[in-house]
Image 1: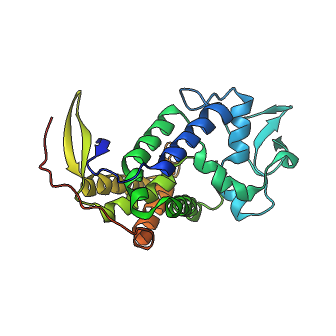
Image 2: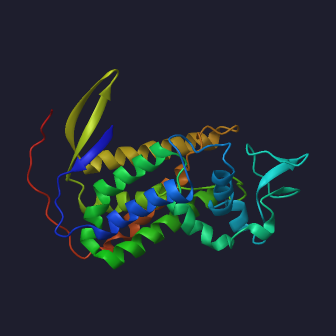
Length: 266
């Protein structure tokens, strides 16, 4: 199930939504210098940005802690992150740890990670922005991102894995959208083995499926000692989504009526 667009037009051009999308793209290509895959593990610049500006739970829950790549015989091991012993980068080169929850919101682990997040933000963010205005949407988006990180930290406060991506903040947008327009129609690609079809599905069903999938995978990840999440911060998604559910009525000022459409199949 892959959403493409919804059927609710906006009254105003979504300036903030577009600006956030542009900012994420610029950060990925020109600041992280990311590529077409999950970054280039051989790129010192990419790894340096990742370890410095990704949000690491252990650094946030233990002020003064510095995490980095362990060094053996003068060579850094980029496949592991430690918060003790000899490591790179040195603590003196670290930014203030409290800016990482904000910088991490604009960083991504690969082109597909970036593209998927920005598609969801465009589909659902423009209407949520329309419902609350630009300034309120900025505040809502940032707080959702912080709540998402909080959800991930709550599950594993000693984790040394850098958390990055806009998906937590976007999950807050999805949580708000599902309450405002559960009956909106979302044009969705449905894959059936090697075939696919396009169908308009109620937004409530699409987003409830998305949340249930993240909740199930998050629980399964907790039950597997070796970890089975594939690097996905499921509880950041859950935390952001719950934040959106709980706070959207405080931020939204105007909710447009859903157009009356039947469900076409393509």
